[in-house]
Image (cartoon, rainbow, N blue to C red; front, side, top):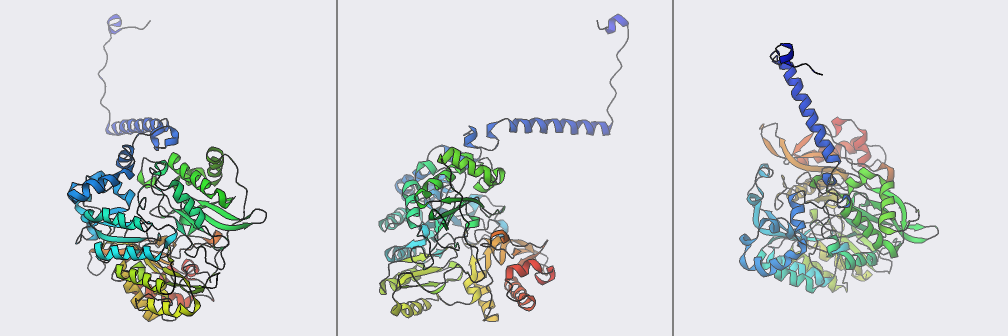
Length: 595
């Protein structure tokens, strides 16, 4: 039995005050216990990552919330019946900056807002009353009628803008909401459209731009692409993914689709027993957390490619991390699971059968350019001509003229490439010079200088609300200066210019990649538009694939960028070893030569 104070007559001493050190220690312990309890709660709840497969469909961020209220594709009805009649200011935010993307529409940046305001202003302060519109062209395939129609729409509704993106499609700008229904009608009348050109959906499917015509091709992937489009694009089954999903196919023995940085890629190979099919890659992606995709080591027969594609995108839908947008890409699932588990889940839970082992695709050699610029013979005896608009910039009038040139020589096939190039196919041998000269009159060269040929750039601050830096004009200045300085450069040097950290222009895999940000101008002491530099990125080389080298605290200003490229190029030419590619040199040399 315990003894009470009354029974013993003893008095309870007053509690002593805790010392400052003890108080701090007690607070630290309480904070630690709180963190432990919160971690345990996160561990024991299905909602910790927002994975549908874990049983939780609770919307965990504003994007997931608006997607949970209905299929975002349904916004088209409101575009056509309400907003196009009532005007821009009738559009509610979740449609304007959310669901509109499912139909290829983004508000563009209001003119006059400098890069320093990008991360400070609210979305409505950055919005202009005009839209960027992406026209979906899977595999970059356009007929003459389609190219002409996009060009006419550009001239009539888009102030002549028509940029070739590195997703093999055309982007228009200055589009008014009042004109969108008519643009939808006219693009769909020629077999195009913008359905799921953007949004948390399967985006435009990349493919080799010489599919069906290449002399080296193992297989034409067009039937597989068309099957996926017919079965799944626009289907509610996949119109609510955690984020975007990027697909690529190639029939070339050396892949020309940047397969290592796609969510899923099918690369043509020849199996010694099963014939020609595809090698499967998953989980690649760039942006602020770049990751190379994993080769699963399995062989996919062409007739089941759509089933395998459906299985992989279903894994992403069900197991993707929906809580944080920054982790809502397939690459994070692959990183958590590893290739072995990923393949096992794909086979056991989604396919119901095992895929046989298969060979890897060939790796690139220094002579494998992969951009298809120049004059090349097709397997049917005709020819194709590939040209390089500087950083993908053309115009509606030029696009119409390209269509006319193709039509004048009996061609009905125009292709866009993943490197912002344009091809005209099916040219009779005796008309090749007519095409070359016609395109040259449009400043579209089939034999451009090396920097002209190898520069790509994203939209940049001119139109993009995420951008900090100008890109297209900066890329043009690089081309102008560097092709004059190095007119006979014997080894290609790729230059990729991106306006923000999101890497739409793939800066991490360029020889010289520029990632837009504000930097300190040493002369003025002020923050000015500039770039972080990545050097020596390389793909297509198997185990030698790597992202570009970054040097600590190394930045260049926007104005100083052409001079920097000139200096580094000269250092490369002065100190390279025989036949050494720029990427190898950039990783080998001391920092002084690449600063």
